[in-house]
Length: 379
Image (cartoon, rainbow, N blue to C red; front, side):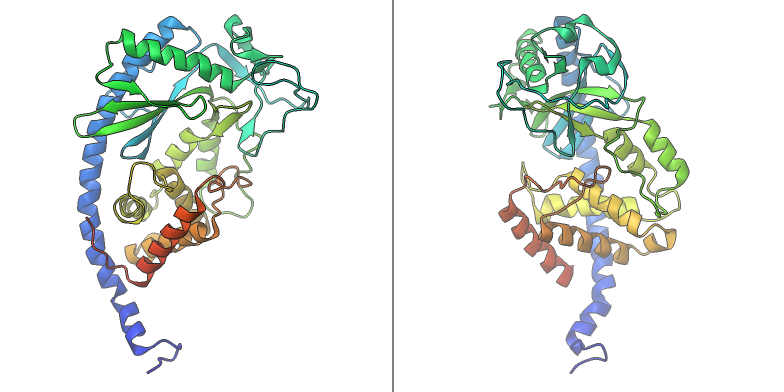
């Protein structure tokens, strides 16, 4: 029999039961979230000690790299992408007073410094050139040929220098049994580390911290939006951005400080956004795409969250967990199905651009099944 909206009576009955199913799922997941937080905190504590030791030695070998001090509080240089994959940004030293460059010039060199007859391709939306004269103050070492070509600080060269420093630091700090370098993809520095519970992989990336400016490439905030508040926007923009050394000519824009602040300010009005994000992450890690290097990371999920918060900006939109959580899953399913997830700050950039589309399609099928029946068996 069909209901007034064209559903079968069985489907209508199931729709009515969804809040009950979600309530059961919420309780089960919350216990797992608490356990995850405890385990991650223990792992991060171990990682912080090793990173402090390595970067202290690296800083002594090369003044251009900063030691990351050990702290009992949260370390902003460590991002947990998955429980076994951490991104560690190592700040550089000796570059201050950043300013955007307006003058366009073509580059005619290879990464080895030889001359090219045609110019190198322009940077993509999340990338940019970095010239040493964009800084009002710079150490003379940044003008050296090991990192500089024709006035550009070239990330591929910075990474080559950095990788050798990491190799030396692992030996000098007597960490061969605890830390080992993995096979690098290009010149990305991957390190495996044994912790008390498991092996984790650390992606070590030199970063230029720019806390005094907001990137001209960030089309944010957008007009006619209610979330976040104007006061929060002002606070976010004052945090600036970073440039990460990736294995090419161009530096990659990173807004980790801004994203962290947005997460911290999520529920100022008393909603359940944070809980929805935590449970979404738990489902992703345990059910939808588990494993060491899944197609989705926490960064993808928080981007989905930010876009959903902007579309549903009011406290009343985030009072009922079942509705809020399923809305978030539907947004994730749409992005995964379309192979398209806009970066929150640089929205011309698709975060799924280099993802494996077959993996995304498998994930889309799992998400569709969950939306049809939110009762799942967790590991």
